[in-house]
Length: 246
Image (cartoon, rainbow, N blue to C red; front, side):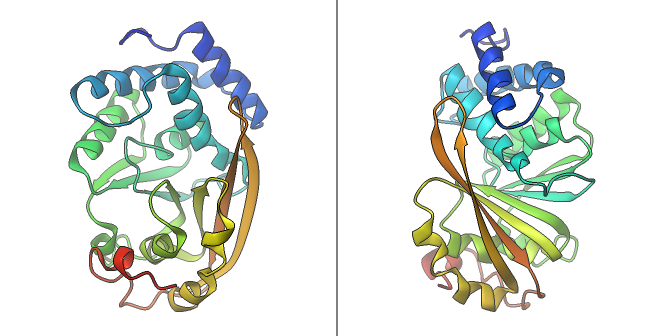
């Protein structure tokens, strides 16, 4: 697939059929996803944003995989959403394209990735999408971000025991954190209660589904925020990963 020509007829078919399998009609969003595909491929010629190179990989494992979040009834409304560790904009950009009423902040610690996300937001004309560069361990202590988001989403960022310390301080009381995981999720969920007791987390629900086209298992781990996170969390940069709470 060449750069700058959008999705091929096959790519369009994969996106539409995959969307239907997830209960989504993506017809009205084809131009946005086609443009996002071009932007990603163009940027990947200059810098390594993603290891996924083929059109099918991008459509299925970036676009559709991001949109599996919309199989949950948690993203209907004008919620404030934080995409923690967004990378090249996933799942935040597809979420914003399909649910424009969401206010989405796309956070990453790598400047070149945030620069790409900012470029994509401008090129796609996405209002209410905010690229943000920094470390979660530091930003979560700032008043404008502390417990300020109704939903925090994370995809391929860290093991759950690390992720809850990074993510739950951003989640407002009564909100939800959703981690997108592959098939080996039980071993990550089992030790979570210890960390959640320290962080203000509550119930954990795992929703299992099949990623269309490739028929791979995906799990959406939903963590409820039931109490305020103590001020000492998250710990300083690097510590949650080196010394997980559970």
